[in-house]
Image (cartoon, rainbow, N blue to C red; front, side, top):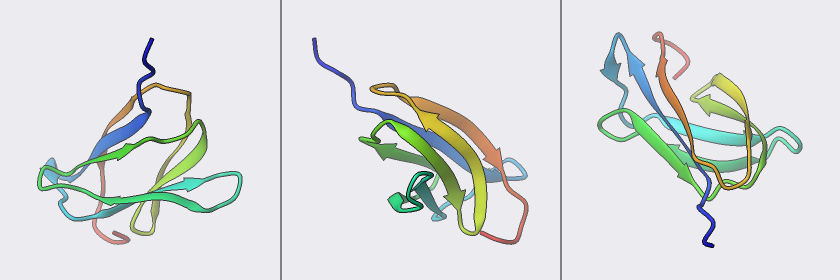
Length: 88
């Protein structure tokens, strides 16, 4: 049986409009190291692939969007984050 890769994905928006080109980071809670860094696409979506299980902070610019635990071999769609101006 093949195991699926773990992915973390979501969308960034302001007033319902996509926020393109924003830097999104996944930071390990155990060591504070940046595990992954991606930019949102034209549709505001981001996708981080091959994430190992563990605890993370998801950040955009200077803001922490969410703390999350990534289970093994499961994709997480975090939905849409509505951001206010400033800090991103």
